[in-house]
Image (tube, rainbow, N blue to C red; front, side, top):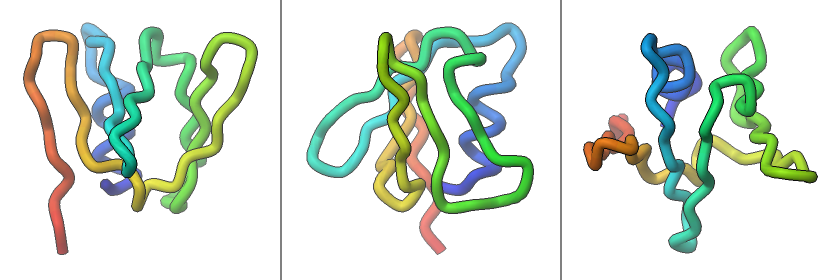
Length: 78
């Protein structure tokens, strides 16, 4: 997963909620786009607000993005 791919998902208009599938099979739900914090320059980490906690996630651990309409977008491997 690249920072730019995640940025496109978070800034798509109209916004579509999505789930980040991370290594280990866990899903992290992103409902409003304001709940994901991406640094201005490309970095390996980003933050997701989830209820009462903020989780810092390594982009290399994100396996796919699944949108609420059922479409999955897998990261490009280089």
